[in-house]
Image (cartoon, rainbow over all chains, first blue to last red; front, side, top):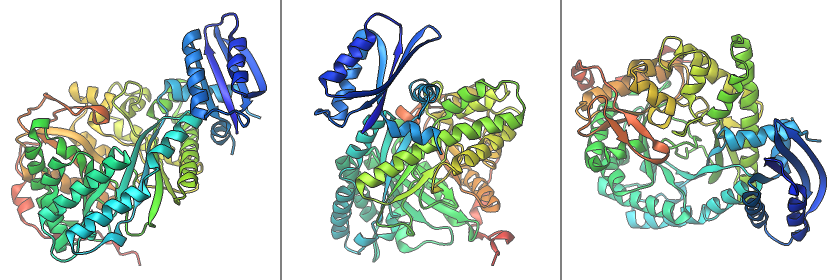
Length: 89
Length: 453
């Protein structure tokens, strides 16, 4: 299953490193990554593959939540299909 | 490939604009449990519901996590209960059945179970009469059971005997739950042209044309529509309608996705997506505020009906292509106590019962969650029901009445229900009598356009 991770918040050093660390610890492969600063906000979107991960999706989501709290950022992971169904006919 | 703006738009809708799935409702047919021995029926009902809906809540929660979409309510609707007790059931038999429904709801973890219902638009069976008589007590002794009674249809006209009785039943329900300001009435809906696949409470039931089990989904998203309209301030109505349509399309696609996924995982057929815009008392989740965004100082002022007509139509046009099956009530809801903008409008006197009645001509679903003074007579309540049913009957649409004559409360007082049911200001009713009109009884014949064959 592929999922989209969105990270939004105040820019600081090491965001990508921290998020990538949690992903690699959980055997989640990054397929695509884009990052920009929009209206002074750090915005990162990642497409990831969670197929090889050995923890549940809920657990991954909780771990990213925890990281989000630590870094004062909003981090969400959502099934890729949500975005396809909303924006593609 | 997805682009970043689309992804961020979706995330913003969910995080900041209250986009959510209002309800995943499993319809369960209880016809296979029908019988005349109350105890046997109750056992079968409990077994069937708890077996069929065993994984409903868990599955909905899993979907919630994986897709990152809040699913606010998980609910069950069942076959109108009056149909499943044969023989000559008594009101106390139905109270017993209501308790079983309540217990089954608790076991499965859903917050409401709908279908403590009777369809009496042309007349009442012994079972219907017993069920209706049992409603006040059933709603007093249960927490999660919702009740509805259909008193009219475009094809059959309006059963005025039932209308008269429902006025009294509402009063009695308020009285029996007076320590909670008549809370029982918040779980009781009187319909004209009730639909069989409505996923929304308190009026949900699983019609006889439905399969053994079915998944119906209700979407929400007034906040998203409001935010989209903020981007087109001052533009003409063509642009307004177009903006609402596009937004409704996206909202509904999400509903369709969740409905399909829930249906697949539960191995229960997908019924419909209900396109209603359902508000909550939360700030930023109000239908009234959409109307105000269109240029009205307050919801309820002149122009409100036109604004609502446009909104309701555009939501349907946008939503209908986004889902393979659309059904239920599908329209904008205007429940007063559940909508922050409606509450404010009623408090400042911009929104009256009469205006709400006019608004129900152009949207679903009726006079919903409106608190009226505790001393409102049963006949006046019946007359309000009759007016609303007439609108539904003549316009070939569903209308409903969910009024709370809060015991001891006067115009201007506030009634607190808590949670999604919100807070309602007590609104004035017309002080002139309708008693002699209601006392006539009988049926209002079906309108001429019912003769379509």
